[in-house]
Length: 466
Image (cartoon, rainbow, N blue to C red; front, side, top):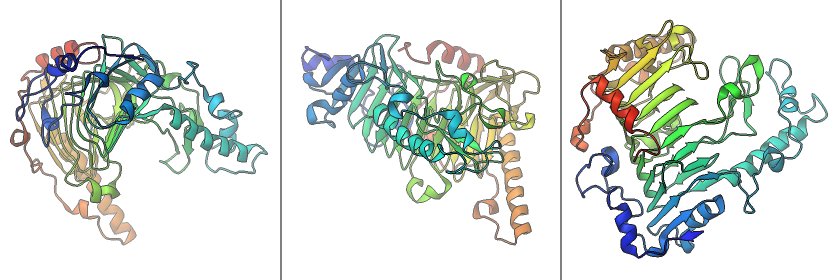
């Protein structure tokens, strides 16, 4: 590892352009805006000592830098050059599924469910119990290898336009004051993804690892990053039950468990299914209520099938983002509910309060309609102002209202047919009053035309454009 040989002043000069004036919301690219400026603010590793400015090129070096001489929460700046693989062993070799669980075979694992994939049996074949154990131990070994945790008071900064984390599960776990900037994060491939027969009408694959996950993290700024499946698109995955691809990815960026004061700006999310999840479950309100305050500003969502984002409980502000998808995309087609699919951009979950402003949606191909903008998952509070669909003003609130009323009617009908009480959430009316205002929390200056949003986001978002 090459530690910076400069004085502490050099570290401060490096980071000075990234910082807002205290109490003010700077404009990009100089510092964060939105919820990341609230609370104690977000400055990352500003003020790092000379020996806490690191330049790393391998996984082993990155892990050492995160440890920071045994003082992981002291201010530190970690500069990443080139590619770092999460599967890179300390000796430089790249570990594979065979290294994590010798003898595991996806086809053999699937055969233990039977042809329809409905019921697992340890005794269906003599190898089934072994395959079950190998899948579990292999998954744990892979997690131990690829998961790297970012501690408090850290800036992780890509150097140049080609810094990439490949197959790393970058995790914030109770960390505060963290900046992640100018990186491409290629989502990990779960070599030991799980088939869940009872998940949905036909069952589903459930992968374990995210490109980045935030658990109870506070004051984070994610800026000019590119999140993608990269070399491992779902279209290239092996075929599983019912002719569907084996889902090897979980989220690109998941935020949960009372995480708070976060801004994701000028970044790209590409070619992925379960893109951004905010709040881990409907039963977690005791932890998440009053938290999950997050801003999404000037990001590109390109061919993201769902969850861009999907929100529970949080006060989320999404503005000047550009969403683009097609029903006929060769690699990552997006089919909305009206077209018989499950594709959508914004997901309104339980007790969510989303404020949408001046977002531009481009959805093309046969049957494309504004139906794709919103999906409802028990969410009844949503406000939109000034957004566009295929270049023209769109009444997104009406789409959201219709979706909620359909969801609520189904819940009421089910309650009546089963003789059970109507759920509390289904007793509430849809409202365009989210109960909070972004302008009361921070200053921001949105672009006011669809053309300006599209042009800005396509020119400035993503890694390598700081």
